Amino acid sequence: MVIADLELTAIEAICNCNLSSLDYLEGNYFEMATYFAVDFPSQDEFGNQYPLLLRVTKFLCGGYILALSMSHTICDGTGASKFLHALADLANGTKTEPLLKPV
Image (cartoon, rainbow, N blue to C red; front, side, top):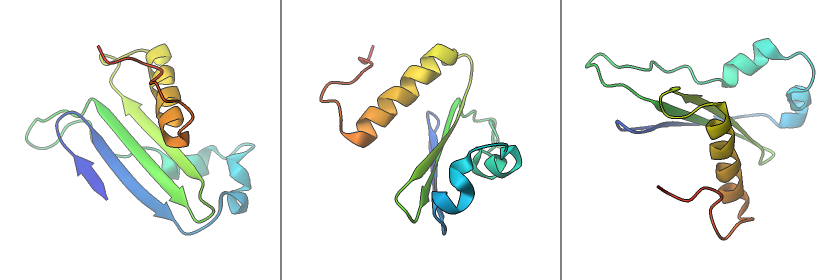
């Protein structure tokens, strides 16, 4: 399923296997990991740009893979890391207050 607007495009995918069958993507699985990467144009045929792309792949075991594509004009590597950390806290329900406060 693709949820798209001008601010965020989110892609939800379901994989019919367990992470254990993929050896948890440990080792040199670069080619396999590319299947889970975001493969979506940063601009559509109308000239609309998508500065933030997020793909969530869910596995039968309940595990997830998050793939993120973000324009450098949105944030740098440190900002992307903090965004993913806040997203993980939200998914786990471990924090009652967000790591990053809205500006």
